[in-house]
Image (cartoon, rainbow, N blue to C red; front, top):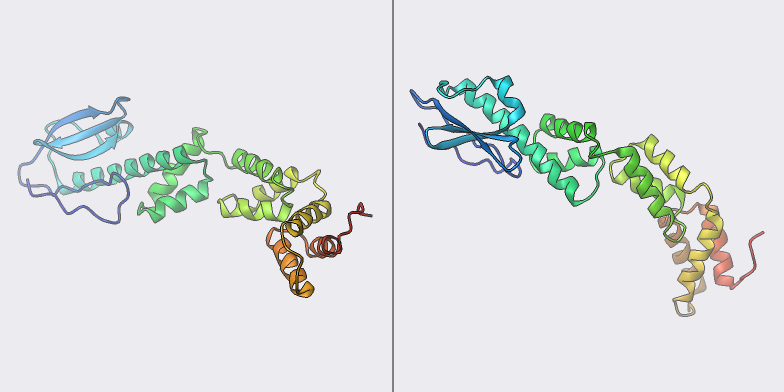
Length: 239
């Protein structure tokens, strides 16, 4: 059997390693690894040439004594790479909840092929481990509770997390249904002003506060209204 090929730097965590077949090489053993028994290590001689999902074993039709051919090496490399993507996906969602698109993007950035990344995300979605709708609703509700985050800002944040536009809009709308955005803008503007020294340049202070509210996602009219009230020190209720 020939030496192992160099480990690819583009493949992500636990990449498959391609072992070039040599004349007369055969599969010597199929060994179950891991506590859950869902992974099979394929050995040629004493060398583990690939680790594959146990569910792929029947489809590949592997058995000890099978010839270790270039075609079989390629098929095992494909199966092992797919398993690596699924493992990596599980690690990513264990760290934090993720949307399907974000999960695929991160897997692709790590070096997994598009088909493997998409298949890994699909498997997690099918098992309920990732759920874009539930993630959008939970995230929107959490954001809405933070100092009256406006609908547009929530929608933008959800889109950045990989939530599709329709789901992001629906979740943001539902979470801010009872929010008075004009009052929220004024509350935030007053808080901002109370933490600063009296401005030496009122016009510059007005521009900075206005830009701050726009960055937070407030409508231009609500931001302008809040700036005028907050800087004027008008504590009256809004009309």
